[in-house]
Amino acid sequence: MISEDVLLARGAIYKKIKKGNFVFTEGAKCNFYFQLVEGKVSWINYDTEGKAFIQSIIQPGECFGELPLFDDEPYAANSIAETDSVVIQLPKTTFHQLLKERQDILMAFTKLLAQRVRYKFLVLKEFASHDPEQQIITLLNFYREKYHTVSAEPFKVNFTRQQIAGMTGLRVETVIRAIKKLSEKGKLSINRGKVFMLKGDSGHKKFVL
Image (cartoon, rainbow, N blue to C red; front, side):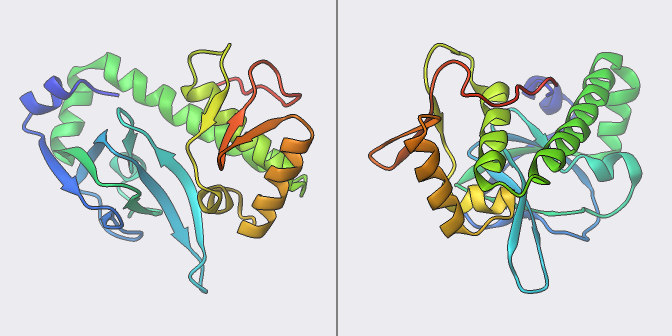
């Protein structure tokens, strides 16, 4: 989202987060802008029984936990390092000053927030079908459209079955069965336990963000 050089010039610092550790917790006060440099982090909510629902998995170069920067409310979800990760953090007040001075960055955040709201609308609509196969294809298609730049090649799904279950609200056993069925139908390919989306259109809806 923002050049690391720009952030460092404003006083940002790097912070290492060990796998399984929290970057921030749901309900906590927001004091920093966070951007992922290395690794992978997720936004997670837990229900009263401790079941995790993964709101999103963040890749290097993306910001996360930005909502409280704009509404001064507490964090709406936890952020946990899925792998050993490095984040760059900038104090909230400095971030606000940066937005005042850089209209290009402000507009980029406006677009980002609109994209994330649109994603939630689309996912909720598709997930209402109660069809596990459709839910999984919808989720994977979104990430393929977002991250896969070589459309002529299969897209490797870098999520575990547990993570897919966490992002769809399905049981892990249901995800395993659905992926197997999708493979039998030719919509996914499984090679040595790794899942791939085949090149070209797999018969699912394209996201427009």
